[in-house]
Image (cartoon, rainbow, N blue to C red; front, side, top):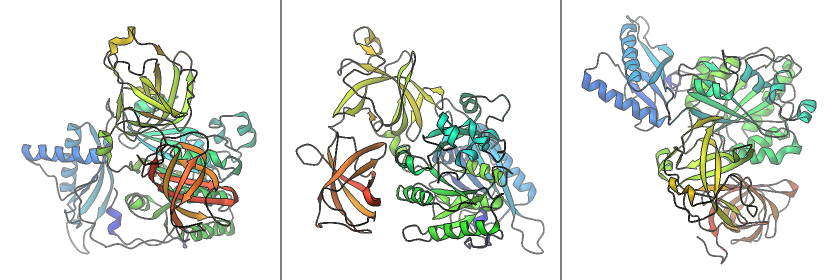
Length: 593
């Protein structure tokens, strides 16, 4: 996405000269690829009907690749050469693209134009970058991006979210954050102790939709109007609530992480910790440095210098790029997912400095997901992140659908799902209704977050027929013997037994001494969080910092549902921090399944 400025030489930032920038070729983009949501077109002038039909099919493919968004580079050859068009030909090409968009119920917006005319040449030639975004549909409803807001206490995380969601600058004393805090002690201390959710939206033309928009007072009204939703997961910054933040980053599966740093206070140990966790979980990170209005020049310089040193550290190796204008913005978005670039915004929630650039950044961010088509065809795996009890509705679970698709249609056959594990067992359930961001929907697909109202079945072998309600006992609350908790999963097929033990290829990030058998700590695998210990190591007796080996873990309290290939975090006393991949799972007889 947004590649035009990759074809110009980027100068280092003038406001903060310590930031690095990269150089690229002057008149060429990378060659066009068949996959992805970016399409190069030299021109689209008056195509005949058969050609127009082919172009519409091509646009439909690009929109599917981008989950409802596509980027067209007009005036660019398939090999990436910036050839350009006259203004008249460019306008006619964009008009054709708008006609193609109308056929697919998609809106077309010109992001920017760039002059590629050689010195002394006439007429002028331009290339254009055009965003195509699908309008709302019943099955997709809206595109959602999940952004975790991380960073140390007093960095201004909740205040920034208050400004973004209400478009009203802070008064310098925390007024903006009062609309977001959930508990009295949070209001009194100003510190977030639980993960809160906030949203903003964008219409098909890219206009911001939040509580400051006309006739918008609820989440449902934002979702009804928007074609793209950005969900913010406001994490805790105080060390006291560090486990909550780690669980949120591991279990809520954010698409991106936004690290907030106070310009006047610098990079705290908690900020370093949060950045490291996001990196090992492979969550793309961008940075917002707040409070630039009250930071003195020496304070800002110290903050920038310490952050640059952090990004250059072994295991990090990131390239920071400060965002000063629209060109910087689109370049950073284009290279964000495919490189080690870290976009950085210098902002103030009091003066509003650079907040418009940050808002546009959220509008342009793509949905990062690989193997989407394959995930859609797999069996349902829904990760339980939250649990609610709603009057007259019963038990509601909130989480993210990792694979497959779930539908609910009245008066049709409803499938049976399996919820668990609790002490090793699963129970059959059916889904009564689904909500995304408090809006009722009939379908969710892999990668989407939603809440599901459940009906618990008394008969594990209950028929899937809708008309069997007269013969099967239903209950909106779980059986007394079943304990519903975070970290469980909802599956579409009868699952194999959960496991007490699993093998992981583990790398020790930090350890005060050594890691060996019988070492105790806390395991994080997706939404699963439980105490565990190392029971075996292959070919080594112990591990030190930066060493790795295959180890076997055993859960301390009950078996869990874990999947080979998932990332595992292991933390223990003395600052022990390890990361790895699950290599195998063991059933009770000690053999793998």
